[in-house]
Length: 99
Image 1 (spheres, rainbow, N blue to C red):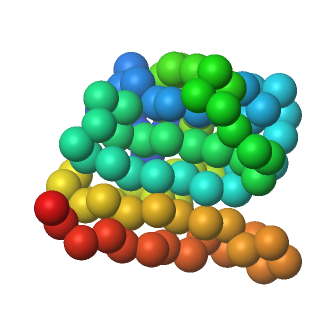
Image 2 (spheres, rainbow, N blue to C red; image 1 turned 90 degrees about the vertical axis):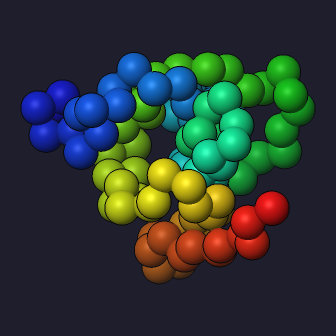
């Protein structure tokens, strides 16, 4: 599966992910935050405390949720949130203004 990973060049990049996702919850939101230590952050629909968040790698996140490969074309400097439609399963993007 690693051979097909669209993030091949960044497999070891740190990703902040909620523990619920590691436990099998459905992925709901993905953030690309270029000014953060972990450029990618992923959460489920549950409420979250800071203690619910753990650091993993982009390779592990892709292994758990291969659909994030659809989000690969985000420019490195773009701040954006992706939210999965509850009924459609499609990703919707919400761009944020640059600082």
